[in-house]
Image (tube, rainbow, N blue to C red; front, side, top):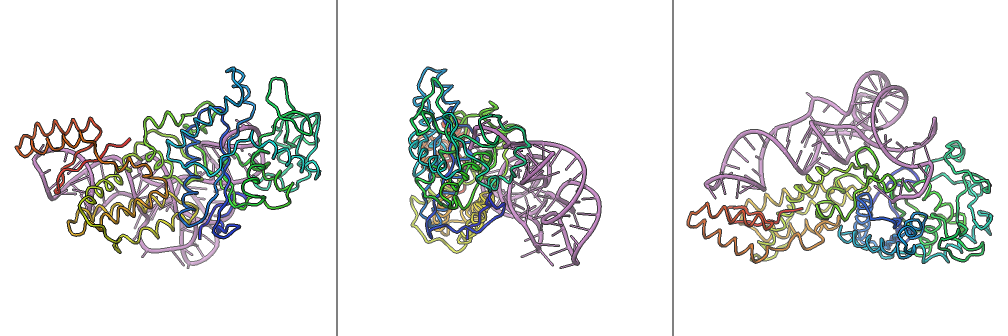
Length: 463
RNA sequence: GGCGGCGUAGCCAAGUGGCUAAGGCGGAGGUCUGCAAAACCUCUACUCAGCGGUUCGAAUCCGCUCGCCGCCUCCA
């Protein structure tokens, strides 16, 4: 039984999908007005792992992650750059897809864009107006907070506190300062769509309500996003959907913790971001993933180049096993998974079942790695069992999105092989000076040579 | 001011009522080795921010204090 921390109830609950064997999940994606940063990388990896694990457990998962491709900043930056908002947004959607692929994050089943669902949003707004939950004013349409008493339930706010907060924008035309825009009347120079309330564009929150319900139905299982979206975005999204349909929206709300830059949240608005495309130049996707998954998804992570370097070293422990297995596999016969290696899968699942505890799951994988290394070193006895064990380790690792690319297991290029042979000859002549020189040459090509009782071993030096 | 979260070894980080407080990085010693590296073995928190309380028993529950962070405004 999978247990999930549900933001709505603030407790860990048994996960029971609406339809047995199926999971429908919606995750709020990014607003595409700039390159994605490490915070987005974490968020994407977290939900990627949740999706992979649910799939691993046998659920048929439908995973939707949207693009917000119309908003104030997109319009402004597009105007500044002399391109249309659409062109501008498309550029960053393309970039985002490249970034996610470079991190080994699987593409969503559906990745809808807000601008392609304006009709659905207009229908939803129409439903809210008809039901008395929204009202038009001079080309805008606002959601009437007072018509939805449970507003504030998700974020744990009460309506009075929101007023007292005094940070709510003052707009005389709103019936209540806490009301929020569903539809914004067009201003000169802005892209707009026709609607029953005049030309304009959708408010931020309405897009997710409309798209989630279009692809997943009025009620679905999981809704995710960064914890900074709990209020107001998810609160509003929920209110809009439920006010119209009268049905419960998402059953479980999952929110990931932030990535801090020093003591401060990494955020586009604070300008303290580090882009994904910058960071993948320095670190492999597996290294970054290990860094992210080492901390439980709800906790804060502080960005640190040093911590990532540590993750790299830890990862090398596992990749070495993969290479050793590849070397053994070439000659050995396959074997069944021996009983000594059978304990790790259940332990791994137990950790992941408990609110996707990747930190603990990784601990299991490292324990597994130690058992495998021990088996390898103890002997020539049963190489097939060692290979079977490593295969099992890889299978479990892939549930976390590790070792998905073949690169981790690719053999050395011919040049390195040649050098290795030359070194073996030199060492046979006891010309260790030459041997060490060749070892350095191989190192420059990115491979580490180690002499073991069974002969030299090659491992790629990680990023 | 309101709401929420965090504080565990040198560093990172699980664990949230009861066997020896996971795992990673770093460090120390040993075996192995031409050297190196890796691997393996052993060691590295009598203690969980502090102080009280509940309990047969608490890192885990409750209260207070201190420190840090997030949200309440666009944000993953």
